Image (cartoon, rainbow, N blue to C red; front, side):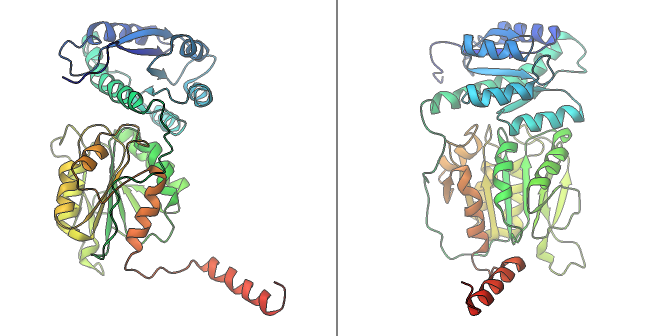
Length: 395
């Protein structure tokens, strides 16, 4: 049994709904003790009815994790997050999201502003017990994972500029496809990493992020606005072309399949979506994507495992490694939860375990290797102008 410390984790819940506050109280009274020891003991140290009370309670109660509603009076959840970023930047925050498009977009904004994870509010359950179970299955593992990560890194820097487990790149197959797997902390990590990829990125990118379909479409739209590359929610039969990022829709597994007839290169591939059974309790599952990439592209596959809870994608990453492909992992210091990348790194199959701010450069170095990179048109123009100015004695 893992030792989670002597005292229980202290959880603060902020919600303007009396019903939700009641569910939270009952949840931690009935499930917080966890006598089997599968998770740390937890207790609800306080509740807040609005954003102002929440900030005051954070300072007074010093919780280990905050469960935060988005829609509250006086200060809403997003405004609370802005304050916490300055006043308590190390506090893990889990947002409670409603089952609406507005709730999804607000949740994504909250993740960008520093929240670590989210849970869906229990709706549609037939009784209180069902609602309680639904919330418990989402919330308790997330609390445990985030608090565990905070305890490990407390007092240490999260800047992550030191590379760990790096091996020198060797001459091998040219990279033809990049596949990425993420879960907890993924949306924020993608929003920091993907915009750093250049507009002439030479291969397609396929991403599995553990999220409901309500979220994956808005997430793709959000990333498309801040990236040079085109980011879309994947659809069945989509042709894989360089410069495009495909995100698996929630509740559908995504694989890469043979290219459609008539394409200039059969090996280019296409998107295949299906709704087979959950794998590793997930749909979409990273393993489905990684296995299919290994089968089709072999040593031309680059698989990147980023922040996330659990072990989804480990077996698929092993398949990529066995076929001669490249496997990379995000490091512990910059991961919200070092579950998925940690399993890959600890398995000894990662060519490099890198901080978040180094991942984009690593992807570009490895995908451009063996290719002639063309200089952007505007850059050629700038050089031409500079040369003319030198010739005429202006420089």
